Image 1 (cartoon, rainbow, N blue to C red):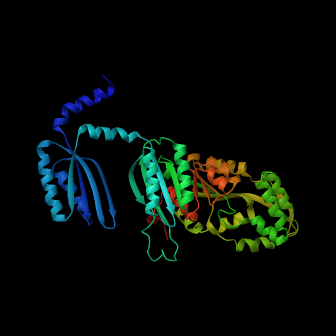
Image 2: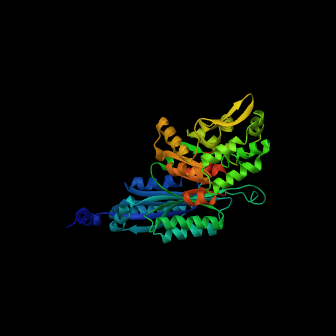
Image 3: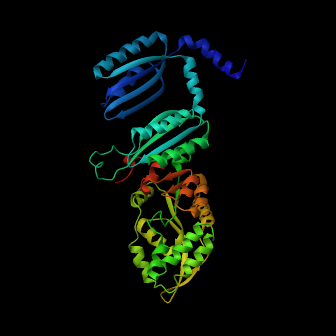
Length: 420
């Protein structure tokens, strides 16, 4: 006899004294429905085994599974029916065998995942494509939540909008890599974003978020702005393109580009900083992260001057970037200290987490370029933000359809939690 058979045998013997019933309630929601129904169960000493409730546009959906004994179950059902009629709601009863219940209990140890879909608009087709892949991978959807507020029909015509739906699913994907690839393809073809994360203790306990700056927090590359002011824009962009083709590495391309800025007046940096194009959603995201107690950092291959400007304006806790050398109010074409490249960004993320006493699994990294990939891979959650194709393909999570505040939905925040 197996250990499992030994465990189940007493239940089989006692099953005749156990009655398990699932009641499903639907109808117009109003205060006191749940209290009235559970009061009946309490009066008859019934044990609640499971309970779940949702409210969709004032329509209640409530499920309660309870355990009782055959000698009182009839009275409970009668009282529930009378109360349902009094409240003007519908109620259905379904008997559940002990074996069915125990099978359900045994599935509680399965892996759990959070699949988040977001974009300016979420359609029935989007939900169908995602839920079909969930089913194809042998996963079961337990709960679906809407994280954004209800969409406005007025904003749909000309206004900005965003929608986010979160699936809580259970099981082990048949082919995890293939599932991720399918989601990436669907996301690109249908113009919405999909995130799949393990629903573990770290997902809602992230404590540190590290950001790239250029083309992430701001919608420009500062070195290009400086180069244009110095009259060397074409030369700087040519070096950048050479680096992107892999002909020279980041450090060498950085030295060459900075050298071309020699003689530029220091005052130009102040002018550029005050007119930086800020990425949509940055202010809202930072407000929410501050309220929730997150630490934030800028880890940039750009320049400290502009990182410090953003730190003062939006309240970042840390800034690590490259320091331009200035003499007599002019850029010398040199820099001070080590170059912040991809490897250095990943190292800084680990160091900040260690200093703050934060587990690396509780960190988030956000960036758009190839030199952000080490940081994205190191963090507990790496997000490619409006990224280059290579970066998006490598990162496990990406956002391409919304602003920076879309990151908040990947963490699990609802609009109702966030300050406007």
